Amino acid sequence: MRVLALLDGTLADPDSPQIRVDDLGLLRGDGVFETILVVDGKPRELTPHLDRLDRSAAMLDMPTPDRAAFERAIELVIGNWTGAREIALKLVQTRGIEGGDGTPTGFALGMEISPKVLQQRAEGLAAVTLDRGVEPGLADRAPWLLLGAKTLGYTINMAALREAERRGAAEVIFTTSNGSVLEGPTSTAVLVRGRTLVTPPSQLGILPGTTQAALFRAAERAGWTTVVEPIPVEDLYTADGLFLVSSVRTVTRVHTLDGKQLPDSTALLPELRGLYESEY
Image 1 (tube, helix red, strand yellow):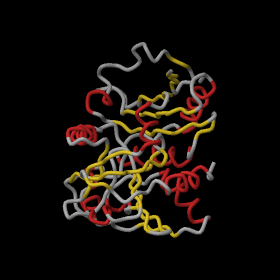
Image 2 (cartoon, rainbow, N blue to C red; image 1 turned 90 degrees about the vertical axis):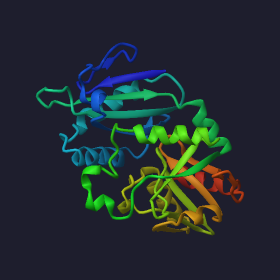
Image 3 (cartoon, rainbow, N blue to C red; image 1 turned 180 degrees about the horizontal axis):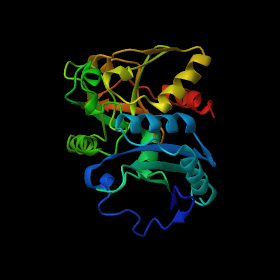
């Protein structure tokens, strides 16, 4: 099932053409997006997602997204949803049509969670590390590279996932050229050391994770220590647990990395997932 809402407050047929062939989001990937998990009609981390949409648009020198219009579109999608209890809700804003007046294109699209993601949540997954070709400090030195913006230009991320599949894995953990952990193509990496959760800093040029932030808030309330610091790649193989977290994935266990079996973190998964769910 899919439900499509436009920013003018109307529903549209997701199976019919809705975007012009000269839209810059289609021609050049010139746009931004967010994906929000909705459970039982309630969107999770809505304000952080909308804030991040604003931040990404600002990094692209795009008009600030019309928050009231997006909120109305979100309500339309949720109000007309009759499918599963969970929705992957995508918010998209492009720069509009080439040669136009600068009016952006925007919409909200609700979709069911794919069976593949549900299986990964339950069983965990295998991942590989891949060099992202960046180094610490590059985001500050070269802001035009848009490191840390959530743009529609996901070509590299999709190519990385295809490379993971060629290597017999389902996911990727990007690294810097000097061997520091970055993020996944659609997720944040979280490491467990004893009763401490660790994630890399966004200053490396990665997307600040909304799900990671929610997990860390809950963990701190439960007495865990949370740390945001650079993580050497070699630490991934010896930690008590390695997890990829994102809105749709929630908290997913990595059981194999670069073909090597990781320490068994099966018992940690329900605890971390319980912490995350306690936020809602």
